[in-house]
Amino acid sequence: MKLVTFTRGPVPEVGVLDGGDHVVALRPAYADLLRSRGIEAAQADALSETIFRDMVTFIGFGEWGKDEARAAAGHADGGPHRLPLFEVTLRAPLQPVALRDCIAFETHLKNFYENINRAEIPPAFYEIPVYYKGNPSTVVGPGEDVPWPHYSQEWDYELELGVVIGPSAHNVTKAEAESHIYGLTCFNDFSARDVLRKEISIGLGPAKAKDFATGIGPWLVTRDEIDDLYDLEMVARVNGEEWSHGNSGQIHWSFADIITRMADSEPLRAGEIFGSGTVAFGCGLELGKYLEPGDVVELEITGLGVLRNRVVSGA
Image (tube, helix red, strand yellow):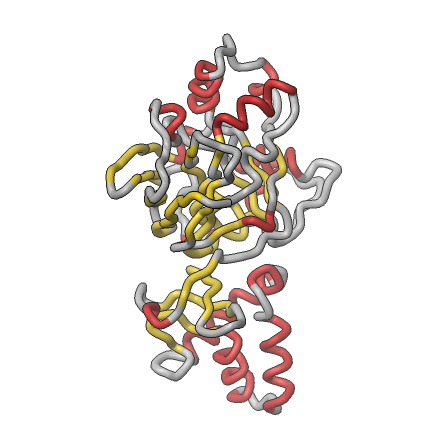
């Protein structure tokens, strides 16, 4: 399934993409399905509200929840809860419980180190997957403007895969780890490069260089719809011009390696998200050019759609 969060009024709703040009509103569609099963109307409404309150809540219902969502979407076929996509506004598919971002592509790290005049990749990179913790409260969704912080003059994007956890994981084995991937989405780790250089020179961070915005979307694609996690074409365009092109198969650390490390003596909760790290040459820093005010950045990944955001002055 391609799951979305959308608005058609003041309250965000959970939906599923249907046919590429429609979305099924799952909360009312599921209530209708329950009534058709003989559930009293008030109870059906309450159950549907509980399950589809928001995307993170829904993810917590696991495989049973996905089965019920599919049934609701099928029951809604042609009915009033199947809405043309152009009549709704897509939002970030979820407001994640927590946000992490990895450095898992060796070539990107090598290029980054050359840019900041470091001689070589530290040996520890080849020993453990590493990541930092970002700001889950500043995620932006498809079509949203990204106000660039006033304290930065070097604006950049990063082309990444976003991995959403579900079910929760704690002290899992490598063999078990990928079963805790609920789904994938496009992930743009917007970066203030001038600030980043200062922060990492101190030996801490990134912080203000990253925390102002992370783009995710346009939808959350469940794991069962993705044939091969390690053969996804990844493209970034700026104002329609291709800047970056890579493949998820270039990753050094597998998602199983990453999840096993993250969940070691620490719980990963359903609804958390982490970025894969930037694919090789997947950012302006590696290409010797940066974004300008008004630029439109598109990330496109096989099967995951196109995440489009405009960067603007003003934060």
